[in-house]
Image (cartoon, rainbow, N blue to C red; front, side):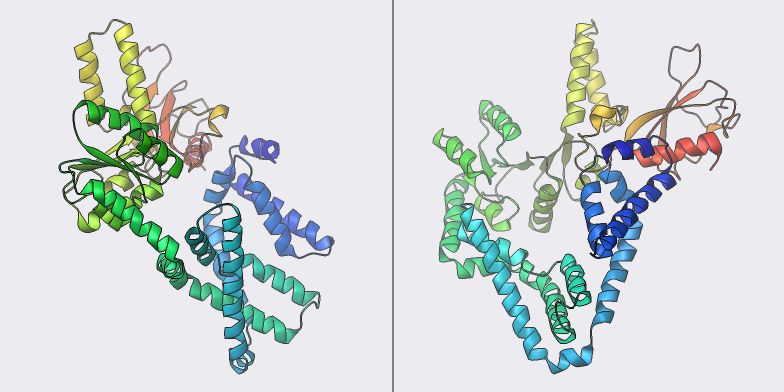
Length: 457
C-alpha cells in the first residue's frame, strides 16, 4: 500500500490522490460484497490498511469534508431504520437491554484491565468510557438482519439499545471518575492519599516551581533549579519513575497534573511558576484550561515538540512556549558560529534576536523521505523550492500577483541564477526563467501552489 501511494503522490495531484483513496475503498467494498459480506466491511478494511501507511495524515486531511458529511448521512440512515412505534411498544425491553449491554461491556473491560495489573478504579473508568456501542456494531447488525440471523423485531430492539447507549455515553464519560471513586473505596482512598501526599510537601513550599512531568526534560530543569536554590515539586503519572526519584530524595509525587485538586495540593496558590515539561499538546491544553480558570496570574511555560501548536498554546494562556526542535536548531547554529570564529557576543545577540522574532527564520524545513515517519502528529510546515521556467503560468508576473495567502503558503526568499545571496521577497519583483521560489507550507498546500505556478490551475 505504501508503494502504491508513493506512485500516486509523486504525480503531485490532489485530485488524483483523493480519487485513489476512493478507488481503493470501492474496490475493497466490492471484493467483500463478492465474498458474501457487506460493502461496509470492505470499506472498514480499506480504512484499516490506509491508516497503516505513512500517507494516513494526508488522507485524513483530504477526506475531512467527505468524512463529516458521510458520518452525518450514516447516522441519519441509521435513524431512518428505526420503527418508532415498535420501540415505544417495547420500551421496557429496550431500556433493560441498554443497561445490560452497558454494564456487561464495562464489566468485561474492567476485568481485562485488571488482568493487565491496573488498579480496579482505573479499570472501572476505562470500562465506563468504552461501554457504549460503536458505529461498527450497526454494520454488523445490518449484515445480521440481511442474512436473517436475527428477526425484524429483535433487530429494532437491539438497534434502539445501541443508539440509547451512545446517547448516554457523554453523561457516563463526564462522571466516570466520580463513579469509579464511589464504586471502588480503594481507588478513592488511593486518590485521597495521593492528594494528601502532594499536599504534605506543597504546603511547606512557597515561591516554588511546579513541574508537570518528570522525564528527562523535567529532571534536567530540576537540576538547574537546585543549583539556583529554587524550590520545586514535580508531579508525574509514571509510578516507577516517581518511586525511583522519590527514593533518591527528589520532591516528586505521583498524580495527574491536569486535575485542579492535584495542582492545589502542589501549592499552586503560592507557586512562582508552572512548567509543563512533557511534549503532549492535549495534556498541556488541559492544564492551561485549569490554570486560566482559577490561577491566571501564574506564569506557565510549555514545552512542545515543534512549532505546530505554538499559537494555540499561547492563546490558551501560556507565558512562553519552547519548541524543542527549534531550540535544538538554535543551539546547533550558535555552536557552529562560534567554531567558525564569529565573536561570542555577536552569536548571543543573533540568538536573542531570533527568539524575539519567534523563531521565524527557523520555521520550516526541506522535507525528505526520512522525515515521513517523524510526522507522528499532523502535517507540518516545510520549505519547498519551486523553479520558474519558460512554460510557467506565472512567468513575468510580479510576486504580489501570486495568491500565496489564499493557498496558505508563505514565500521565504527568492534565488536567481548567478546570484550568491538570497533575495528578500518584495511585491515588485518580476519573475524570470531560472528563478527559484522557496516557499513555506504543508505538503498539500505546497503541491497546490506548485501546480498553480506551473499550470495556472
